[in-house]
Image (cartoon, rainbow, N blue to C red):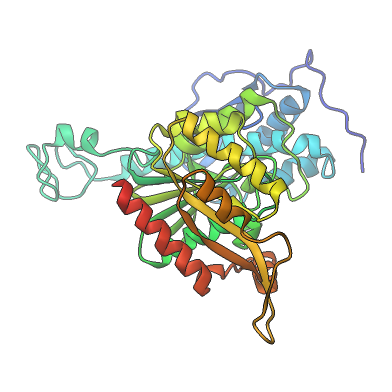
Length: 412
């Protein structure tokens, strides 16, 4: 492996800076806080020239320069398989975790410029039929397919990105890590989707995004269209997680402002489209991410608190309850996870921790108790294998029905 030796900041590569005559351009700020821009001169579907700028570090400069150089004379089709690994390999930095987010920023920004150019080519290829609203068979007065005046039809179409078209927004919180919050959130989203509801699952556990693992999506990458991010779709379920942008062993070593930017981007810049419900897997605690999430979502229809029975977990769960009350977030109830071990041979339930800690907390704080979930080795093995099936259990079915009842009672 070659020595990691980024281009010094004072030395700019030849392809650094705005390009005159460019016909494709994109600007993107990554989760790391760095902003990169790409300018491309395209001949049809081929890249003939490329340049970039970045306000980032030396590594960002190097990755942007190499990405621009590697793109020359490639077609749109060839660039669809362009990955950060190709940039890192050209630099000899395959094992340098510090460079991975810069390579990802470079390839993503370049991809956005190409997507913008490809979209323009498609528009230019459409036959001119008067004042077109983008749908075929349109007259100069109004669109025959929708009956809307052409001058208004585009403006009337709501954006696919952001939470404005999400009917219900549910947070899943825990004051403490390791209580199975992500497992409950993932299975809750899957259960809602299995009932025919268009469901979103947003993983904002920035320092420990586990949803991709639980759903068997570790191989997925963070993709974009224009300035919007594209969720991974599993039938009725749409999923977004920072895990799609980070390697399996890559940490997110970020301060509060950077985390706030990521949370806002994942809420407002993801093409959720029309959703019946958005389930948000929150990080443990009650910190920056939670405040940023509340601000970005605007309206939150309810929160589910997940805890295990032992007092050390319940104490932190109580703080999550107090946070919701201070933030005026409706509390839908408490789920007690790992409430006991059910013997697969005789069905005897053995409490591993103290009994009913979550239920007592719910009663003490005047909250609905949604139900308890027993320890089941199959839940762990299925989650590790990317095939969560907790929602098929009778216990989880009772939790789901109780939750739906609380949502209806709240009028959400």
